[in-house]
Length: 132
Ligand code: FES
Image 1 (tube, rainbow, N blue to C red):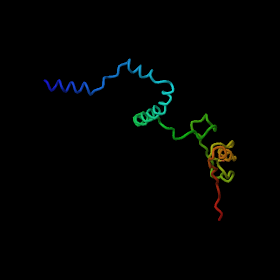
Image 2 (tube, protein in one colour; image 1 turned 135 degrees about the vertical axis):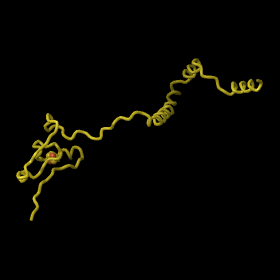
Image 3 (cartoon, rainbow, N blue to C red; image 1 turned 180 degrees about the vertical axis):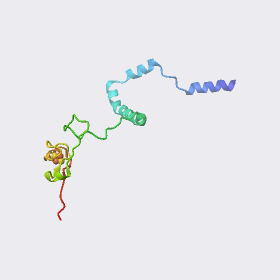
Image 4 (cartoon, helix red, strand yellow; image 1 turned 60 degrees about the horizontal axis):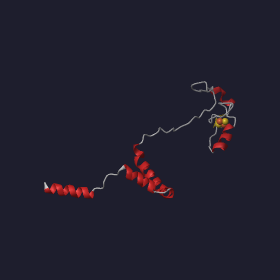
């Protein structure tokens, strides 16, 4: 029983006393505003490290991989389908693939404005007849 008392005495000496609300409050009030401001970068780094540590466990948002292609053509239809008879292919040479043409599905050159505005590089489908 003596050795238990000595272990208890050692433990009570070596363990710090749990923080008491009064001491924490006095610690917070001891620091001046400028000292708190100097601590901000350190606290920011701590917050960043904490965030990086828990980030793998946070629920992930589903990222949107695609966005709308058709902004205004026949939006009342659930799906825009165009049919062209093969006999009529000679009537039109360029077909729109940018979905910006005012004469869709025929290209009216609107892809040029889209490319200028966005840095994209899209263009029409051009139907050609093989020269024999
Ligand atoms: Fe759309 Fe030319 S207008 S590809």
